[in-house]
Image (cartoon, rainbow, N blue to C red; front, side, top):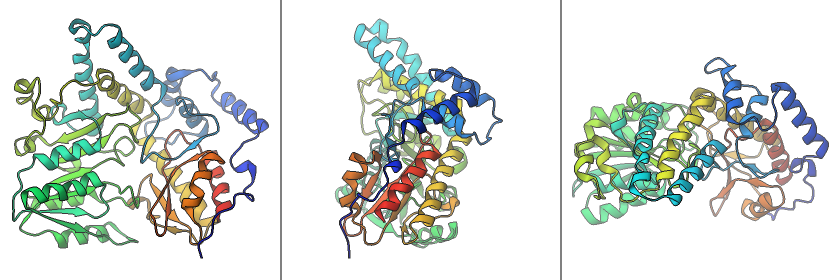
Length: 438
């Protein structure tokens, strides 16, 4: 029987650290690194350089990383699958660029943004294992997905195979287009408790036919946390002459992604999620060999030149936010300062600590996300039988200052998505709150 949750028995220490605890932690962190709290990005760069490439950093280092974000004191934000804060170096740069444009919107003053935009594209391509003429800065994953969906020539008799756990912009959007052009959409379900990559590949292999033109899937599902073996799926599709679109909303900015190595034809992502970038920024990757197979959905100023520059032909979207475009490059600088491998390792460590804590303290919890690291990432989703998580959701934020997501209707489940601005201390506090729920 589902019950309405009472929070009276959750200890205050679970959500409100004492002043003594705060001062002790603060002093310990500063003593460990020998720096003032206002050290800024330069100090973080020096600290990061002290670690070998790919080496796992200590908690003192990650507290310095957390200090780079304007998070409200006391808030535990674990909602990276939806929206992330930008670090000071990024938000300050976007503010500076915005103020610059507002102070002088002349063509002459704004001319410098052409170079900043080019630099951002080059940095983004380097970061993603692509070439600069294969990437476009869009507004978000949804726009990127729809640019691909609307741009492919599909007709009656053609077939598109989707993962049934895709985001609506890579799911329902296909349905709408199919209604117009008459092609068929087929959805693939994967096992609820996969034990290996083969368990995830097999349903797709079975679904592909000689009519299949496109295989489109989320790299990691936002509703289960399951990570698909993208390279294996793309290899299988390429061998059959099938286009592949990867929705990378849950991997862009947090996982080490090499698009040339994965071998997909299209990849999309959002800057406002794990990438920690400016709002209304995103990524569209179009493999060089597929540029001619995709029609642009928007044609505006600059088309004649862009149409001869690879994927740039999909970026003539009219007047853009110059500050956002430049801010994408600053975001890559920030992420590379910390190190791509180190970021992924940290997020996986936080997710593993959450899974371990949930298993130990809430043994009745039912995971939607695989416990195996190879089949998951930073998204952790589970339900608690008998607990009305939707009823608990408002108090998780208002009383316990925990930012997360609750999803589903009949049997709601909770989603935690920690990022580099979270600490292991915060994981422990979350566990205290969740024990109180159960």
